[in-house]
Image (cartoon, rainbow, N blue to C red; front, top):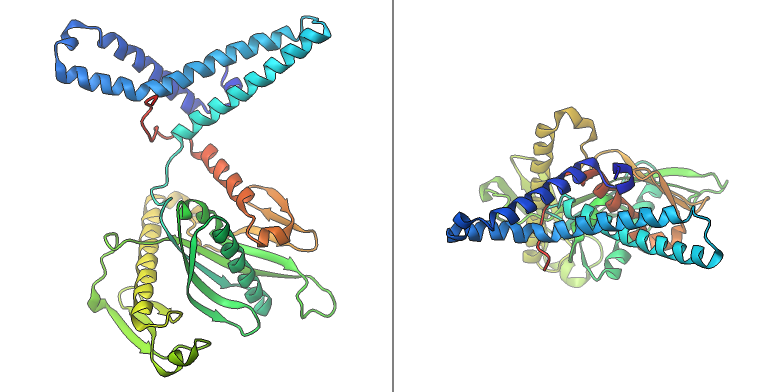
Length: 373
């Protein structure tokens, strides 16, 4: 059976065949008298066999279905009457569904896991080129992620924002908590471009503007060790709305990390303590992201231009309003209904990116036990 027929990469196919061979070797070993008399070796080999069993069962089932499918397809060329031809066609379709399901399950087993996939995130959206229109687009993106978080029952909290007073944001930073947040939102990192006629454009001319989206897994305290003496803390009065308490009491916090030069401001909470806690979370997350980026660049110097962390000026998506089309340039695919997309209906794009990444990276070692239970 050819690799093309299997619709599965040669690397995974080789690993599956090696696993099946090892499973047979274990079956033979477990029947040897010397192994049966060695309790420790018997337990270790039995455990290994149990871990491989589920994978081997799926692989053998796939091979069986492929053989049955080949036989069914050959019958279609035998000049069957209409009734038999219809039955064979139904059988072919059923076998194809089973085949595709098993192939997807096997690919999923070998898919590399992102250790940060279930972490909460800090998202930073900044207006790029385009002036007020870029700031309005940044606000559109923020609302898109807000609606998306609500649909997935994630919790979104704004940490700080710098608004233009015209409904836009020069910058907005927020955190998102929930199951699998980073695993999905990491695909939003990069430069988003919009093409539309601004509200202020009297001639109806289409403008192109951009906004950048950075998505960073929220750092835990054990991951980044920050020396308190390296941080300068400034307390000041919050700007913008917030009521009399904000105007009378200095609650806003600005942290300056001397070694890195990073500055974090948090002023959206009503108490100084809450703002300080959130500011420390953002600082820790930014430092972790910077450390990871440095590590990536050191390990992948040959691919330096391709390493992205969300702040890279690489256009990932274009929102074309006149044509009601959103094009994801990583996929080379367009999606329609911009109003729905800006209401947070972005799962089709994210799912497609996850599938693409799985296909590109599904050549690593299996990441989970193969037991059949």
